Length: 244
Image (cartoon, rainbow, N blue to C red):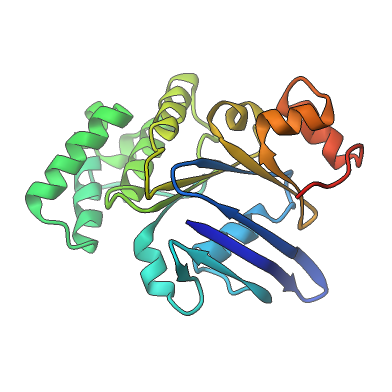
C-alpha cells in the first residue's frame, strides 16, 4: 500500500530526509514516529503529492506520487492538526460537499454519513455550524471529511493534538477499527503511548534518517526497555544499533 525507496529531500543545504526506505502493508496501522524536525511532515507532504522529492520514489496503492499525483489524491485521506472548517457550514453540509467532489450519489453519501456518525460519535456536530465547535467536535468532522470516500490510505498527522480525553478515545478507537484488507492507516505522532496502543509496526525517524523499523514488541525486546517511549530515547541516544 505504501512503498518508499531511497527517499531524500533537501531545502538548499538542509537535508530534511536522507535515503529513507520502508514499506507498509494493507491491513495495518503503521506508525511514523520522531521528534520535531525528524522529517515526518516532509515525508507526509511528499506522500500527499504536496512536495516533490529531491531523489527517490514513493508509491501509494501502486501509484507513483509524481507521475500519478491526481490519482494518488483520490486514494488518500489526510488529517493534520492545522486543518480548518468553513464556520458557516454544518458538519453534514461539509461532508456532503466533500462527497460530491468524489462523485458520490445522494444515497451513498447519506449512508456513509450515518456510518461515520456511528463510528466517530458525531452526534450534534452534524447539524451544528462549525463556527460553534469545540476542538474535539471540529477534529471529528475533519476526520470524517478525510474518509468520506473510504480512501485506501488514511494519513493521520498529530490528529489527536489538542483533543480532550473523550475525543481522543473516540479517535484511537476509530483508528483501531480501520484495519481492513486493501486499507492502510499511517499514524504519525510524537506521543508514544498512542502509537503503542494502535500501531502494528512503527518507523522511527531522527534527523531525516530511518533509525528503526519493526513491531513494537520487537523494538522493546531489542532495546531491553519496558515501553516504547523509553525505547525511543534509547534508539535516539545511539544506545542501540540501527536495524532497518
